[in-house]
Image 1 (cartoon, rainbow over the protein chains, first blue to last red):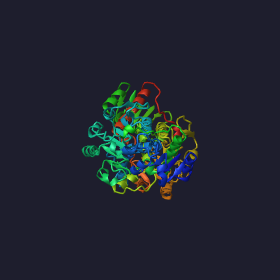
Image 2: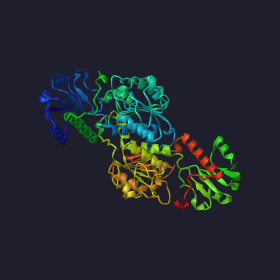
Image 3: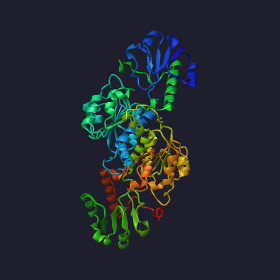
Image 4: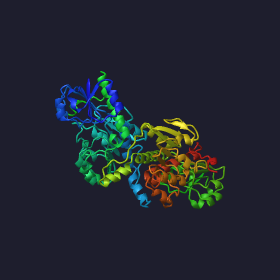
Length: 301
Length: 301
């Protein structure tokens, strides 16, 4: 078996793969049975006639050239490998916004010690967690531990310290906060529209640590203009790593913005862990064991 | 029985007391068997010869004139009445600091999208929770739900999702973060010194939602000067409501500051709940039932 590794892999991790397969470079990619990559080039794909398995290093799979991946090629993602820190980050964004930390810290630094804005309790308040994968489930458990009344939304029922619903409207109606940890698929793209955001409380906090494109950009801009107390706190943006494309929304006073740092982009330690887990999963396939995180092709094409 | 109510009480709550006792004003305070107050005046105390019970509306009891309270007078505090929102606020301060939200949000607003500071995971990291009352226990459970390795410190052992210790050094050694939810007593005043703070990680976050005076002010100033990556994130200050007295520390770049808003001062809803619980506890005493949160006089004098 031959594996084409297109990501920069530390020697020890490359060594683990070499116990089960020959590792080849780009010049011999056409011979590869499997590939370990962040993404894969369309042109290259067409030349990889022996390809049976693609192991992606990222949690999301929406950036792959799905139209050009033959249906007989198995694609495995890396969901869960960064779930803990991304969930932590989601709770951080939610509480920073909900507890008015930015507002009061700026005032304190300027010598204004007045208490001009209410700081509401979260206990007993409805919070929607959209997406109950490893990230969403972790967010939901942390918020439940703080006493929030959590509504968990996903397409398939999951048990946990939340009230399950597969209806977006039910999850968001009257919610004081929402966290989107949804993957981007053909089903979730643009799923959250203006009508959904208006169902939330007037001063609600909407947190996004999944993919920006799940939420309609114009809907976000409109609700932020119409409701000055509504807060959009996000680590992910429609322009992906080209944040300047979203500078209009990022600059709004009721937006809290971070540059896609919750997971691997924010920490070498997390990137290392993601590579480790991707390599372990690739090795499962090489050994003939069942890999985790097999993509559902029909979610994307 | 007569109760002197020195706090501004909504009619419905005053009505609850009146089912069990006569409510008297300041002019007849000397006739009172019990008092419901935020604090009590020394001079007045000396004239209240029939006084047997003091119900305080605050969670902390450190502000009372303990030297002048006769030993035969029972004092009840209001711990727990604001525990949920204060615990939420502690987690908010911790995660805001730990995840570098202020740093990156400010950069994003200014059009600088570079990732110049690492955002570490909290999962598996040691976090010390100092004080395992209702606030500390809630903080510990939320952090444990996020996967942190929680060390719980208090004088009496308590069970929960933490490793218990009654040694401050053991709780703080190597910790990535600490949350102080300790009450201020004669035992905890100035308890956390420079030597303790130096035991923590170089880039640790120290959160205080209990009382500022538990931590030595000079120790905080010194560690913040010596360790630019150390963060002190606090809602409570040595000058109490006179925040200008701490402007020197509040103004430091590695400080996140809020003006004592985690509990009752931050929210009318929380203030209302605190009054409700104080009234219920007073009524327990009036009915001859056992009130909650009886103070230990020896903690203060």
